[in-house]
Length: 251
Image (cartoon, rainbow, N blue to C red):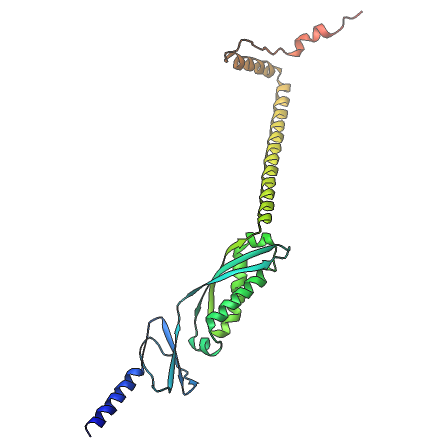
């Protein structure tokens, strides 16, 4: 007779202990009672549930999840085959919907991110993918957030990490970049020659108004040449000095 109450007390103690659930600060619990979801989401701390299969508590992590999207084979709008990978940051904002509206929201979000990455990158040309990274990331994030909102999942950030190009495309882009640098160098050189010609024209016009300036320029040139250790000195003589000798005498 004494053993029966002890056994009952032991069973009751085991039942109570089996019904204890402790949730961390970053966790929320979705409670099912006899298969029906309870409206109230359990918060962090000590929670008591009815054991023996009556209550079932599902823990949901509310922290931001970092998901790596594997490399996807993408054909761009200009028919270039590339491999694109990305990283997605998201978190659960509604634990109840994350359990009721989708099975394994992590897997569902991962698959959605892969398909969205392929479809969005395939809509643009290669130059856009390489240059407009911010707009590309924002577009993918908006699409993912729109589709995951009914699941209680919020996509906070999407970043395209790397775009792998074929080897022949890398070589073609290198040749294009080199040709572009050569073109810029020639344009800069031509612009310099044009500016120099303009300045020389202005100087010639100014010296034409003041003939003495030409003589001073000759003397300055002679001084510059004489300052060097040269065995030969070139002295520029104005051609006007020889006009008298070049003019045929009048008969």
